[in-house]
Image (cartoon, rainbow, N blue to C red; front, side):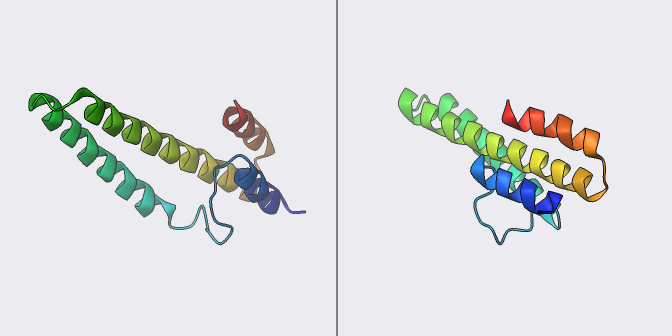
Length: 103
């Protein structure tokens, strides 16, 4: 089994990857930037909700959504880095990153 196949399999088992057809490393920067811009908009929305004294639970639900979105971005970044290091033969870096992902 190749390193990349192993890492993708591990990514699915850890819930980092959702779809086996996803090419994690190639072209992921645009998707991550789009996610971060979306999160930025969500944060602005939360601030407006707070300023408008909206109901507490509505604001908390939005905060939970932002936290989840940030976690997904972090997982995508770590997965990309692991796959990139694996492709470049940087096994020590892969081991360190895998420990970070599993924590």
